[in-house]
Amino acid sequence: MSKADLDKLTAQFPGAIVASHSRHGDDTAIIRTADFPAVMTWLRDAAGFDFLVDVTAVDYFGRDLRFEVVYHLRSMQTGSRLRITLQVGQIEDGPAPEVPSVVALWPSANWAEREVYDMYGIKFAGHPDLRRILMYEEFIGYPLRKDYPKEKRQPLIRRDYSIT
Amino acid sequence: MAENYTTVLDDALNWARKYSLFSYPFVTACCGMEYMATAASKYDIARFGAEFPRFSPRQADLLFVVGTITERQAPVLHRIWTQMAEPKYVIAFGVCASTGGFYQNYGTVPGADQVIPVDVYIPGCPPRPEQVLDGLILLQKKIQEGTTYVQRRDRGELAQKGHDQGAARELGPDGKKRLPVVA
Image (cartoon, rainbow over all chains, first blue to last red; front, side, top):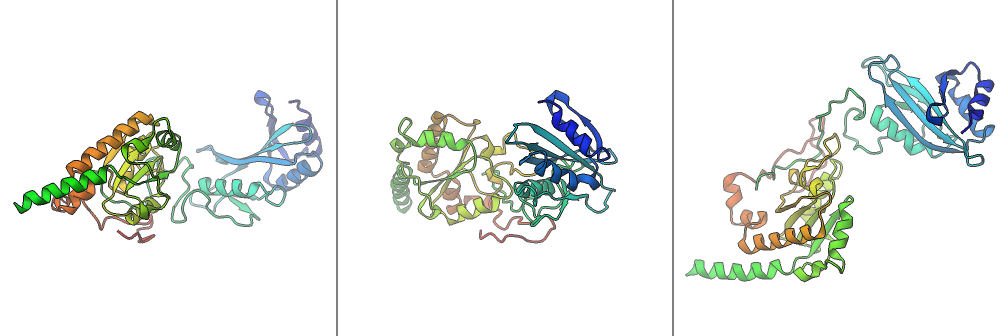
C-alpha cells in the first residue's frame, strides 16, 4: 500500500498524530485520545474507510501508558488499509482506562470493544452494552493483562473425580 | 448360590449393555471432525453397537466429551451428565477432554474429570478413528468386567474409598456459592 492515506491524515490533523510509521507496509498512526472521535469520523466519511476490521489491545506492562487500543480499518472502495492506535494508561488500582466508543460509526465495533473490555478492562465511553462477552459474569479481573497471574483459575464448578 | 446367580445375571446384563450403547456427543472443538469420521460409514461405529448418537442426554448412556472444556461450559457439562440415564459411562475424547491439553490458561478446565467421572481417556490431538474404536472396545471390556465408575459406585466400592466427593466445591470466584448444580 502507498502512504497516501497516512499523508492525507497527517495533513488533515497535524496536531492529532503522536507518531506514525509504515513498517512492513502497514500504515499506522498513533492518535491523541482527545482528537480520536474527530479523526475516526473523518476517516469513515471523507477518507472512505467504511469497514472496521477489528478492535484489539496490547498491554505494554511497565510503560506509563501501558495499553494500546488498536483499530484496523479498511476501505472497500480502494482496498487500502490503515491502523489507528490509542495509548491509554492506568494508575495502579486507579479508575479503569477509558476511550471513546466507535460503535456509532461502525456497528462492527460492538462485540470487538466488548472483547477488549473483557480481556483488558478498558472501558469504551458511549458503548450501548458494555458487558463481558467471553468470560462469565462471576469472573474477577482481566485475563490478558500482563499482571494477571498465569496460574490463576476461577472455576465455576469442581468435582473430585480425578482418581477412579 | 445366590451370589453366583447375581453374578451370572450381571454378566448377561453387562453383555447386553456393552453392545447397545447410545452415545451423546458433547462436541466443543476440532475433535468433532474425528468423531464424525468415526461415526460415518468408513469407520462405522455401528459395528460395535454404538450406532445411535442421541442428541438428548436423557436418551443416552454413553457421554463422549469431544474437545476442550472451558470453565464457562463446565457447569453445563456436569448438568448434562446428571441428566443421562443410568447406568452411564463417559469417554474423554482427545487430550483436551482428558487433561486440558496444551491449554494451560485462565479459561480451560484441566480435564473433564475435574467435573464428571471419566471411564476411558483417549489421547491424541485429535485421536484417529482407530484410537476411538480402541477406546470404545476398552469401555466395553470395562462394562463387562463391571469396573466403570457407575458400576463400582453402585457396588459401594467408591464411597468406602472416598472417591466420590459428591458435595464438593462449587464456588464462585468471590467465595459465594454460584450456579447451583444438581449432583
